[in-house]
Amino acid sequence: MTTISAADVKALRERTQAGMMDCKQALQEAGGDFEKAVEILRVKGQASAAKLGQREASEGTVQTYIHATGKVGVLVEVDCSTDFVAKNPEFVAFARDIALHIAAARPLYVAEDEVPEETREAERKIYAEQASDKPEQVRDKIVEGKLRKWLEEVVLLNQPHVNADKHEGKAIEQLRAELAAKMGENVVIRRFARFEVGN
Image (cartoon, rainbow, N blue to C red):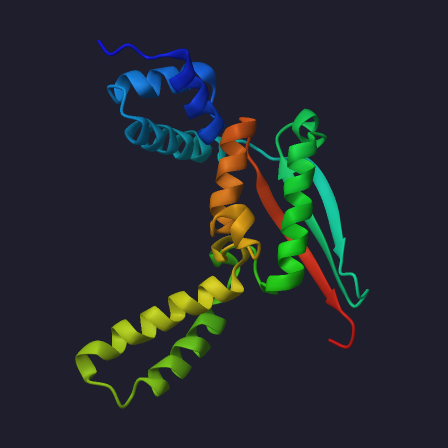
């Protein structure tokens, strides 16, 4: 059995924000391999986040962002399972950060399942028309690729956070899942409204 030092456990905890015992178990499971332990914790975190996703989120916070010019503003509702987490400064900061992102990135929908089928079809037709001069066997792939790219642009959860340096280029859904795993609760970005003067 591999001997795991307290320093290794601490380093892994600092990098992943996982609990001390989880870090120790992951390091033991990985035979002391730090990168493998990180991967084990990520997989477990995603699994527990998926499990948390089935819990009701009836508490939460509404946060705002008003751009310095006063011409763009956002209201966003982010929900969780308990009022304890709803008042947690990190949870509130996450909601504010999402409001800032929405102001800059202009998403139209929170999740893919909110995109109406007729809107998808209209986009598909445009991409099919654009690909009509390409060889027939690649047209469908081109259309699906462009549709996927469009969904990345208009769906909040698919968008990489606008503050790429701070969030290492992670998508909003990844940040949401990480916060859910860290808080031990379901975290749901419920809805948002974006206002822009003249639009």
